[in-house]
Image 1 (tube, rainbow, N blue to C red):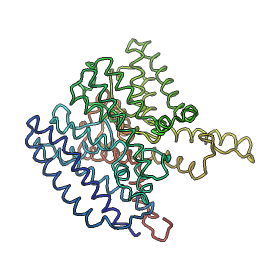
Image 2: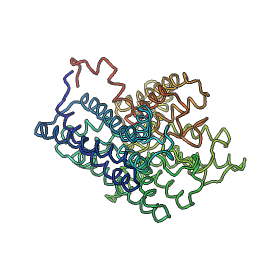
Image 3: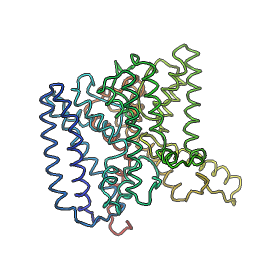
Length: 483
């Protein structure tokens, strides 16, 4: 296979420059709070990233950038590998004695927007808390998506690059050029971030707490105000804001494009949005009735936890581990389903669930009318056989990875509830789970090899597996096959 190494150099060089720049806020925070070792290590790392990035970019910026689909997946995998490794270095060289695997886990959880940790947040310097929140924010939509949006000369290859990283089964064009679409996405993302920051600050949080929680909130990575995992000390206002923005950011960003363009009919007819709202309301009703019967919570607890799990934010305002079994089944189902396509939510995505449900109905129809023709419609348009096949394969792949991941995690000999829910918590980028992981997503109960596996599952779930799984197939490397 011929690999477009020049394109990889261009992407990597810009990524290194961006990484050096986004470290600056954490460096300033470390100096403000007197975290000298962390400040020195991050400053050194930022300088190295910037210098290497400038040198590589200067030597390759005039090259014509064209790519194949294979290039897109391979470059995405290699780029995210670089992100995770560099992202772990501030933790490793902070002078706090964290081992490398734990640092890789924290970095993977950050970039994949998984609300999980193995290093107690209370033990992290404030600058590293901010750094993880920054990783959450840029990982929410994607670093490659940012690169495409700020560098128009990637327009030839932008869609192929972003296809491997985009958080959903498709990416609706919001502009005639793909980098224009990427800019729209980041524009809406930025507006939501600023809005949550202002509202959290008005709610009485300090500027630092409001910042890290808006960065992690809009990326559906959870929040960092945990007190033993239960954020019961937060005011009702703050809880409502966090719940609201988790819902908004797990909604397809195409809805905000429709709103921006005043295409209100498109919003009204959006099937994915309707299903998203409907399943949250249904799960809230089921959970609400169950906890009301056992006197373990109220309707807002039911709504907030439903949104927490469907959006894959993984925050908690109540001890849901004490709730009836039916509520846990509903929440586990929410972990699998996840948010909408083209959002910061994880999971299978609601659009794929809709397609798979309609495929089942079509199968039933064909059993009764073998010669009948019944296409599958989505947004009042028939879906191509290829798209239906792709959605079905992804669903099967998702459960295959879940089963293999659970099997490997079971070698730690923890309870079945902890093992199974821990695997889906990592794959769906929820973090929060059940068993020993309930109420607080502390994955330090797993061994070091298991933590490394969980890191792979988190990043794999964020990239929707293809960028990793395809590398282990013969056809991917076969140059005689079509690109």
